[in-house]
Image (cartoon, rainbow, N blue to C red; front, top):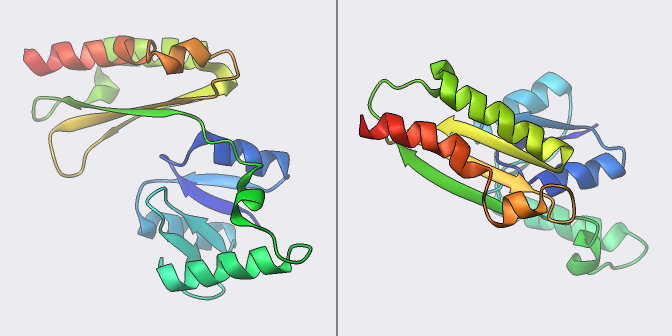
Length: 178
């Protein structure tokens, strides 16, 4: 099987799973979407960056005790006891920056040509070394702009100084003050 994460799952997790030849799929943010994707794929393991982990062979919701027991089982069965630090050393988490941009009610960033052009430009600059995600908040009038990149790759200056975000954020910001 594979692993289901969300749009906000760190790119380093995806790359680590890829190196291990473990399939990875992204779902919308929320346990219910992770569960939906797990069922569609026929997989057992998924979760969110918030720490909600679903182990469908044990439980159908993100239960902290079940998750902790699953981690302990994995650590104990891997060539004797393995420390959590050793188990996690193959995963390099990439820096992520999250910016909330207030927008007027009814603004659809997907229909904004300046926002879409800036998004394409940012994605071209990041290539496979990073990702940029725009998603509307479900609770307030903001667009969440998340930028993540591998600081060892081509996007290092971009992500480290958040230089890619402003071109994407600027059209959103201009829209918010009109």
